[in-house]
Length: 111
Image (cartoon, rainbow, N blue to C red; front, side, top):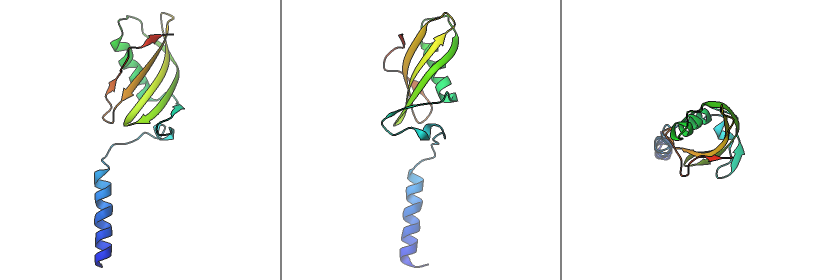
């Protein structure tokens, strides 16, 4: 192997090593970076709704997720409309970091 080939291999190895081992789910990779895209109801979105409901002061349970949008940032933002079993429709914007942790800047809002 010549010196140029060795340098190229070392460079490529360092690029892949620095990229980390975080996986992007197939359905999340369809979102445009920075822009909002309609999303299928994924396990990550279901987890986001479970997180929101756990943060709400309610005994109501999830009836169904009405719609969801996703946005790729350094992690993912989800804009989710959901219906509770008490008939209330809510909206929440939830952030999921690259480690899978959920958070909200603002509480869910009644629609």
